[in-house]
Length: 173
Image 1: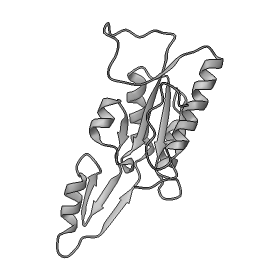
Image 2 (image 1 turned 30 degrees about the vertical axis):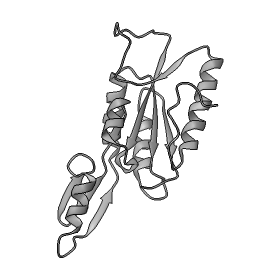
Image 3 (image 1 turned 90 degrees about the horizontal axis):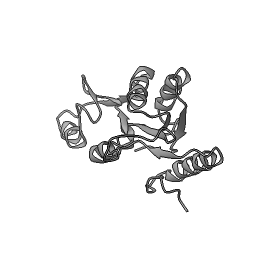
Image 4 (image 1 turned 30 degrees about the horizontal axis):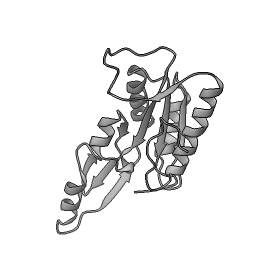
């Protein structure tokens, strides 16, 4: 079965995430080290056992992760830039799904394009996770064949002081 710390499976490539977490769990067990996922909900005393490692999770806005879910599990979501007509928006920050479809109703219909986050945006998200006590990061992204987000995340991870495991979800929203 799935390790106790693994999140429930979700549609679209979750088997990659479960496999990575299972591998991580097995390595941790061999090293006699417990691992837990980052969460804004700590113990009642607010203390953390130093023997525990904490894995932070990062994704890009193409995951279409609900904001409530990202907040509940302290997941860093790095926004893609969406250009509609002559205006740039940060997906999920300046522009939500309803607003996006409302803009598409304009006449004449505006052109739409998207660009991946920069390596600096991913580095800032990883930094935030590290400052919350994460000593490892799982970074899950839209498939590398459809977007440069995974490559930007890879560039940010190269110089980061804690291990970052990159996962190509094999999906696009």
